[in-house]
Image 1 (cartoon, rainbow, N blue to C red):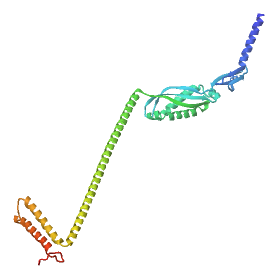
Image 2 (image 1 turned 135 degrees about the horizontal axis):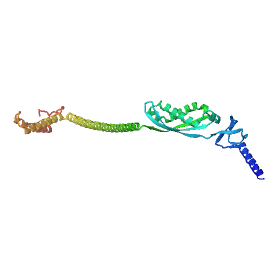
Image 3 (image 1 turned 45 degrees about the vertical axis):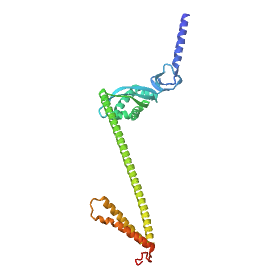
Image 4 (image 1 turned 180 degrees about the horizontal axis):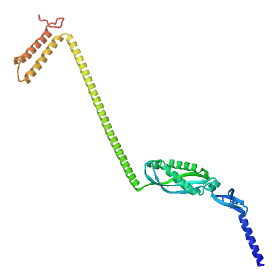
Length: 320
């Protein structure tokens, strides 16, 4: 009886083992490589699949999701012979599981080595400054080169990113000195530009001040000239008016005699002033007594004008 139970147990376990081998479930994130007696039969997509026990088997499983692989740091030399330690990260995805399994022994190691060699090649084409400025260009070139080489592996390189670029300690010291010199240069340029703008503003202010002063002086002279012109005009008008009045007075009866008497009086007054203020006498002093003489004549003329007759020309008649 015990032998029968043991035999039944063995049969049940064998049936379970066979059932286990007959059915397989592939997860959503994977793809299975099915082999029949060691030969590739097909790719098992995610889901439930039936296998022939001891004949069919899932030989390999590949990842369907995008994979991230770290690229270890490596020494690269730029075109201007500067050593750099560069590391990065690559993003890839298995497109054809059959090629990824049978086309390359280990596509992850192959991707790392290919990324490293391509990165060394691309950085060797650039100068040190370009490696820092053109990371995007380097990344795109590395992805394109890797894609060409890995076309037979069933792998798609989505992108590559340079993570760190570290020059040597000596180069870092040199770069720091260069950056310090560049900062000092920019500071000197800024100071020079500020000084230039300051001098420009000062000179512009002085120029504007000189222009304003000259305009003010010009306007002052114009105003003075206009004032003098107005004064001369007024004096001339007044003089002309006075001359016209004198001419009108002269044309009247007795005007000529009055004018002569007036001139003689003015002459005598001015001559007397000269004799009073001067210390040297050139003309005899008795000439100053002419005023009394002419005053007497003026009185006689006045008397004759009152009592005598005046001829038609306005002169006194000496016969009376």
